[in-house]
Image 1 (cartoon, rainbow, N blue to C red):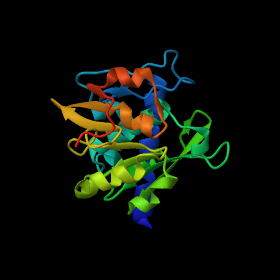
Image 2 (image 1 turned 180 degrees about the vertical axis):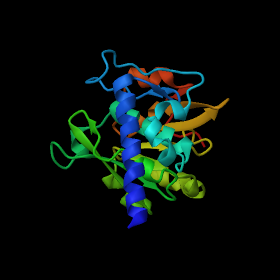
Image 3 (image 1 turned 135 degrees about the vertical axis):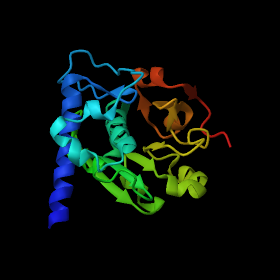
Image 4 (image 1 turned 90 degrees about the vertical axis):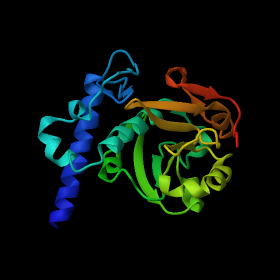
Length: 224
């Protein structure tokens, strides 16, 4: 019971953090969580020295300290990806079906992922899930491939290549292997590489705002 209360408290802290970021347009890593309903200019803000502490409300610091700060940032980045990518209507089972954010393999996010659950993105609610096998991936719209799956990465990406799934990962050479968005750290700053060819193969459209933030944008679906 005590553990459940702590989990709920931390998830609430993450949710408050995301809400505060959307309202203030504050930067998390390389991105600002900029919701059009809350911020006049729907901008992604690049910052050189953004700190997670600056993004988390003071009262949430104790709880947030138990999270892996790197993945608190990456949870916010996944939220942005949901905002700046478009899926075909056929990817959803009914008009207002939720947009599902999944983690395949060992979950590095913890309750930071739960903080995304229920957030609104273009009239859809986000739903979150952890999956253990790629066979479960077709029910997902954003799929974060955990580092625990590195050995099987080529097979995983081949399996989902023609499905409307935005694949994201921080595994080395993720985009070159056929993943759509690779997360990486450059001088302690969050950066991305984008495989536009893989996105097009999956039937997804990525915002030009997102493309402009990438260090590299490749058009070849896989380079192995």
